[in-house]
Image 1 (cartoon, rainbow, N blue to C red):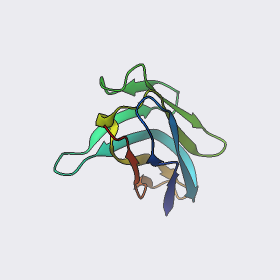
Image 2: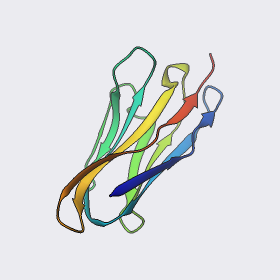
Image 3: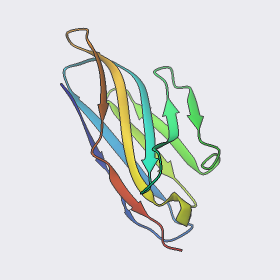
Length: 120
């Protein structure tokens, strides 16, 4: 079992910054990709940013230049630094982590989701 705990959401004004974190715990042997998604009511979950085990990053076009994903492999934590937030960034943000457990079985875990609201 691998659990993810997210923190850092809230209400922010346009142009402000926020950082999300997502900590993985449990019987972890290896973490591979760490990903942030977001979802608004009535829409599909959207990939926001992804970081591989080697540190390669990918971003949605809508957040490039404003968001930065990073990871701490010692703490098994992924971060999402969000700058210059816009009302269209309002969503529930989820982290997703995959890898191998201590029993060498694959896992693919999701965080509980954290709401970010940027009023217009």
